[in-house]
Length: 320
Image 1 (cartoon, rainbow, N blue to C red):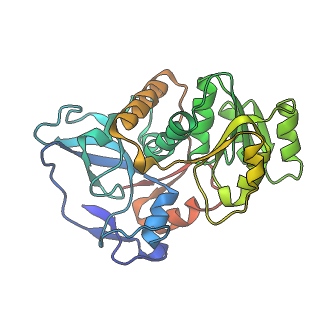
Image 2 (spheres, rainbow, N blue to C red):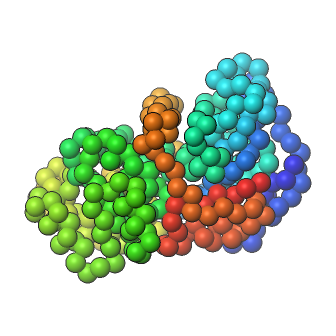
């Protein structure tokens, strides 16, 4: 089968399309014929050996995929051969024609959701759910500010928060991005590159501030985020690409919190609850994955360059 392989860590050019043996499912495992594979920023960090990642070499990248169950190992009972599924994590890598998964990593994909949309679910929707509800403690009636709301995690965060009854303020740096955020259901949309967007947040909230901030680029925004919080407000840090200086007194005067989120630390029961909620949202239409770019598998290097650009809208997927 065709698969992307990495033999040495480094720039996107290390992603090479090769022929490798097709895996076979063992006990409790599921083999998925991949119709689309999701590209996430974390894939680029792993490939580069950045942020503490040191994967065994060689390896096939990719955590998220969608396709059809090709074969099921003994003891695996959650899915059947021929079923449409999405994979939130794999054992052998998603950038391939076939991906071997643990049974718990595979979830039913409703007929109203395309395979490219299904490949947009695992990391982005899992992270958004964990950030909002497990770490952020979001409650109906609260106000949430989603920074970078036009991106892979921002879009599901807006959709989930709106469906749960929160007032949603979303930001994006381009007119196209802001229109996309409006389409996803944000009540208010702001340009985070504008000099007065902090004042706009306070006007929208009547000077009270927001209950929750979902922060995609903490090294740029975290210090300012603290000034926007209401009493007992929370900032959940989803992404950061460097260091930042903050004023702790902004936390003290509000009794506010900064909380980190890492999807890899979610427990099995937390993941099960998250994907149960995601599945329900897909079926009733409140969750609608947005795919920005679709590229052939051989263009994985280009996908890795695109996914870290600030202007990326929606999800980037590879098509084997």
